[in-house]
Structures are given as structure tokens and as C-alpha cells.
Amino acid sequence: MFYRKQKAALARFHPLHQALVHEHRLSVTLPRDAWEPLIQSCAQHRAHIRRRKWALPDEVPLVLVPLVRVLSRDLRRTGTIGVTADLTGPEAAGKAGPQQSLQVRRPIRRVLQWYAFDPWLAVRAELRDGSTLDIAVVDRVRFRKITKTNPRGKIKTKTKSKTLRVITVTRRLPKGAVLTRPASPPPPWIRVRIKDGPRPVIRLRARIPNAPRSSGLPNHILHLSAEAFRWTAPQARRAS
Amino acid sequence: MDGAAGEEGVVNPCTVTTGFFLLRGCGRPAVAGCARCGRGLCQGHAAQNGGICPECSAPATEDFYHPYWTDGYRRRYYTESASAYNDPYWYSTFDTYDRGAFDQGGDWASGGGDFDGDFDGSDFVDS
Ligand SMILES: [Zn+2]
Ligand SMILES: [Zn+2]
Image (cartoon, rainbow over all chains, first blue to last red):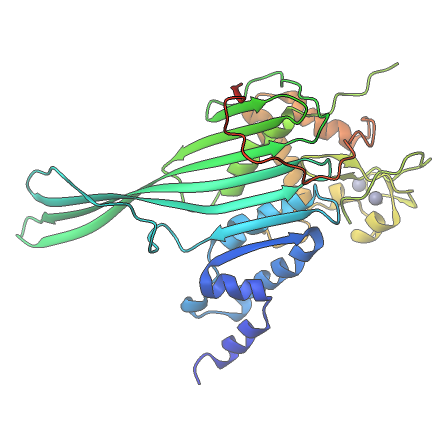
């Protein structure tokens, strides 16, 4: 039987790791220390699985693992992290909107354009100060299927895509939390909205044109998140 | 070893900085000093890396699967984000914590997870 060893290795992986391999999806809320066995299982993937059909989506090691690792540092033992990830990609069924024909000129014969809406990541963490942090990543992908005649008279078709990524970070603070405006404004790519009051909320949004699929994304998300914590940064101890 | 509750009134507390965004001194009683920098370490933090504190033993790795990747990433993160925000104070929150100069235990002791529904309403203001 083909892939006998790999199949056996796959069956020994964490059940959620297996779901990520087979369905490219994850939807679970786990207490802080329950994430580590899943991460350790995923860390074993490359050593045991070479079959492409059973590959682990890149977003797992490049996005999910670092985010969960960072967020768990700010959790109590009983605090939870919830992750809803759909890693099937913007080309998966059900994500594409209606197609539209664009006007063209020779040698282009036809351009079909459509947009896909791909809300592929939502993370919620219950932090140890009583606040919650929500992270959402939505890709809006423009597809263009271009049909043209090449110089030798052959008809060629190719599909181009362009991704606009919107990252939202929302921090909901517990009753009585006090916001202090940071000394410097955030970089221009970050939009900040504040709801002040007994339970303040800080909402941040970044639009990233031409986003690569996953590399560098945790860095982006965490730099965006910094703004949500600058508003509650501890004030230095004063000599009294 | 992380997410420890700071204990009030420990005479010689472990000064390892826990957390990522929510920084806090570990605060458990120190049983030893870091073999490199000398800071006080509790039993757990002393055992984590053979008597060397997480800051001194932080791996400079890009391997997110490394169990202590976060220890090395955190300082880089604060350096980079402070410069992205042009906010030296943001970095100093980390650095100052790391030198134990903040009051410990300034958290709102709330149960957490207490959130209302939707905040897209008009009571939001642009900052
Ligand atoms: Zn040290
Ligand atoms: Zn400690």
C-alpha cells in the first residue's frame, strides 16, 4: 500500500492537526496550555509527511503558530484562545462574486473580472488583565482571467490576482480601565477608532494592498496590535 | 513557565518579565541568580534554561516552532514597533519592566471575557 508509513504518522497526529491537513480548517477555543500539544504535533509534520495531498497549509507554521505563541504569553492558565481559520484559499467554492466582462482592445480578446471575499482568520484571546483581543484577517481578491492572441496567432489564457488584505484588531477593556492617548500617533497605515466609557474599546484597522499570502503577516498583525496596548501602557513609577 | 501571578510582598522576587503586550514581573520568590546577568530567578525560571534567565538565553531563531521563540522575538518586536510608531516610550515600557522599575500587579483584576455585542455603532470616534 502506498504511503503506509505516512498514513500511520498522520493518524498519530493531534486530531486538530489532522483536521487542518484534511479540511484546511480549524475552529476551536482552547485554554492556554492546550495549544502547545497541537503546536508540537504540527512541528512534527515535515519530518513525517511528504505527500503533497497531505501538506500542512503554510499559514499554520507562518501565522497561527506565532500568533498563538505570542498571545498565550498574556493569558492566565485558564484564559482561552479561540481560532477560526479557513485556509482553503480565495479560489475555494463559494467565495467568488459575480463575473463581469471588461472592455478590451486587441490583441486581448476577453477579460473576465470577479472578486472573492475570503475572511480566513479570526482569533480571540482572553488576556490576563480582563481585556479581550480580537484579530480578524479578510482578503478581498480581484481575479482577472485574460484571453489574448499571441504574435504567432495562438490563443492564450491566464488568470491574474491581486489581494487587498484588511486586518482588524479590537481590544475590549474591562470595566474601569483608563485610556491614555499615546504621545505619538500611529503610522499612517493604521486607522484607530476609540470608544471611551466605562468599558473602553480600541479598534484598529489596516488595509494592505498587494498582500503576500502569509509570510510577514504575524509581524504586521502584532505591530498593528501595539496601538491597542499603547493606550493602556503602564505609567512609569514616580518617586514619591 | 509563564503567566505567573505576581506575588505581593516577596522580599527577593524573581525579576523575569513575563507577558508579551501585558508585561509583568514574575514575582515568585527568587532562589538563584542568572548565571549571566545575575538577576533573581524563581525555581521555575531557573530550571527553564539551566540557570540562565529567558532574556539571556533567548534564541535568535525565526523558527516559530521553537518553544522559546517568543523570548527572542519580544525584544526585537518592541525595538521594531517603537521605531514604527516613533514612540521611544513604547520601547521603554519593555526595557523599564525588564529592569524591574515598574510597580507590579497593576492589573484590573477582572474575570475577563465580559464583552458586549457589537461596537460598530456611532459611539465610536476616530482617533
Ligand atoms: Zn540573565
Ligand atoms: Zn520566575
